[in-house]
Image (cartoon, rainbow, N blue to C red; front, side):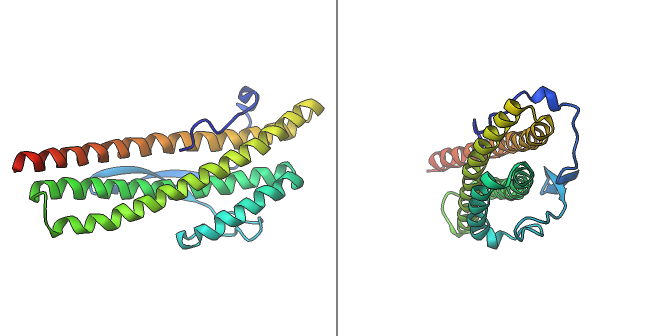
Length: 213
């Protein structure tokens, strides 16, 4: 997820350019001896009804709306594009954190059940978490596609700004795209860590079951 989908132009020119970001503070959340990096969310407003932090039950509608917003962004200009990137950061971060929490729970259940035995009702509760995990990963893949489309539009806008010497527009778009890229890379790294640990737990469970026979 999120791999190779961003192309930025001269990121050094915006190294000292700071803007208010949707991610305004960080904290840690502990889940059964695990620590996941969390962020405080602020409300996003002024963009076609995106006036609150989103409920997961509305994600399909939001994705559909976001696709329409990306189409509209080709006509609305740089401010619209910048705000779309902030909205997408919120969606990606919320879903990524929920997915990481789900992976941690799957790891813990798998390890606990492995010690109990390879067969039994104690494995049934894992099914619910697996289904939810697949749903969350699918959501992240949808956001990857949206980010890819959005980054192409932003890249074209940046090239236009370079051609006409509009440095202010270039700075605004470049900084927002860099924030989105950084967030995606960080979340990808965290997700990969837990997915690898879950894979190892499943492998150990299979081996434990074979040895127990």
